[in-house]
Each structure stands twice: as structure tokens, then as C-alpha cells.
Image (cartoon, rainbow, N blue to C red; front, side):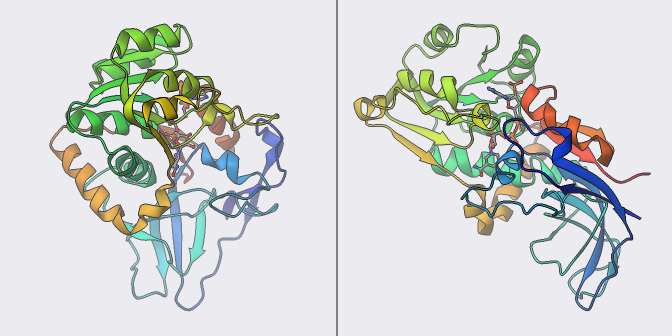
Length: 333
Ligand code: NAP
């Protein structure tokens, strides 16, 4: 049988357990040109909360009754498609289910001998591509820049900061709690980390970035973005990657009241969507993989188990109770 998590109710505010319904259906048959994938891991992403809204975005909203959309990695167990053979491992958007039948469009091969499977939906997958292209192409970092990164202990932020360090920048992270901040500095090699849950962010920005910042990579939006705007150097770049502090809002998104700092600093604030770099993912993965092999880049995944535990695992994105890329193992051994 195939356990599947269906999206059954659009949430207002935080997604509660009744947003989804776990069902069991027969493992699908495959047609001509199709493959059957036994999914091992699925990716949990803050963006999933946005996909639940019936609103215009960079991707169509999820339909009620559909399998919950998710990135995934798994093994081809049946194939009627010459491009894939049984035993291949592939990554794609297979959804929160144990098996998926597909014509293979959007799936690409991965090698579990080179890296553990969860890494292919983390640092070597969409998450890593967001970080790499976001900070290099949109952030336009160069050696000597002062770079500020929020969500610094998370999937994207941890890679952003490490890439900026590799490129010769001074990097200050922002994360929730002393333990995460210690991890960001001691394990990931950031120069400093501000604990936004327990410290005064505005005064700590002044201490850690006395001359201001060249680049702010924003994963959280809200008050932290507003404070960062007050610390810009001339021609600073702000990369709008995400705004997790706003995703569960029942009221309007809180926009930055300090936006005129962009004028004063001749700065730019630019949004980015990782899909725009799809034709360069190979280049990004090769570079990140090379840095991992050289011991310059650490990849961390927080792997939880059990498709039935999806709702409480998803909550961890918002409570922050996890370190690195959040992954759920959906296959039963
Ligand atoms: P993540 O950082 O691994 O997990 C989310 C983290 O956000 C949590 O661990 C938590 O860390 C922090 N957080 C939660 N609520 C917060 C709040 N109210 N204020 C401040 N921090 C809060 O997630 P991710 O996958 O790497 O995604 C990070 C951001 O990138 C998200 O905004 C996501 O939507 C965005 N993203 C954008 C693209 C794109 O193409 N634009 C692609 C992927 C991801 P603490 O414990 O430190 O609070």
C-alpha cells in the first residue's frame, strides 16, 4: 500500500493537523513511459505554507484533495522509461507519499555513494541552490564585504553564511537561542551570531557591524529586516529570499517602515526565486559538492521519521526546534 498525505483544508494562520489527511491507497500502476519511485525522504520547506494559500504566487496554489506538494528523493523500483532504470536514485517533487508514479519530467539522478540521500534535498538540492545563487548572483558578494544572514542555523542560511566565508566576507548570523548561535560560530565558522530571541537586535547589529553591512540575506522578514535597513552601507544589497516570520500571519504582512534607508544608501532590495536558476543547478551542485569534499562546507540535516508525523515535524520550521535542513523519512524499513 501507498501512504499519502492529502491537503484537505486551507489554513488561516498556522497550519494545524486538520490541514491534512493521511490515507492509504494501492501502490499505483505505471503506464508506458512511466516510472515508479519508492520515496525515501521528503523535504520540509517554509514555502509549503505559502503553497497552501489560494493566492497568486510564483507557483500555482495546491488544490484541495491533492497530495501535499514536497521535494523528495527516492529509488526507481519499476521503469517503462528508457531514461531511468530500476535501482536508480532520483530527486524531484514527489509529494508527501511513499510511492509516486511519474513520467520522470523534473526528476534527475543522484548518487547515494557520493552523499547521503537527504543531502540531495538539502545542500545539494533546492536549498543549497537557493543559498548559492542567492548570495552570489543576487547578493553579488565580494571579498571584504560584511554580510548579515538571518535564519543562520537553518537550511538556506547556514549555507549562505559558509559560502560568504569561503568568498572572503565577514559574516554575522542571526538565529534563535544561544545554542544555535554557538553552533553557527563554532561549527559553521561565522564571525558572530546574534540571538534574536534573547538579545537586543538593534544594539547587537551596531556592535557586530560597526561600519554597517554590504549585504543582508533575509530569510525572515518582519522586524529583523526593518532593523537591518538601518545599518546599510552605501550600495548595499538586500536579498529577499523569504519572510518566515510572516507566513502564519492572520493579518497583513508587516512591511519595512525603514525602506527609505534604500534611498539614503543607494541600496537595492531584490527578491529571488530559486527556480530561475534551474538551468544552472548542475553548476551550483558541483561547486557546493566540491567545497563539501574539500571540508570547507558543512551540510547538516535534521532527519525525522514517519509520514504520519508530518504535521508536528512541519511545525518545527516555525518553532525552530531543529538544526539545518528539515527532512522526513517516509519509507518504512
Ligand atoms: P530553515 O531556515 O531551515 O527553517 C526555518 C527557520 O526559521 C527556523 O529554524 C527558525 O530558526 C526560523 N524562524 C522561524 N520563525 C521565525 C520568526 N518568527 N522569526 C525569525 N526566525 C524564525 O528554512 P529554509 O528552508 O532554510 O528557508 C529559509 C527561508 O528561505 C524561508 O523564508 C523560505 O521561505 C526561504 N526560501 C526561499 C526560496 C526562494 O527561492 N526564494 C527557496 C527556499 C527557501 P530560529 O530557531 O533561528 O528561529
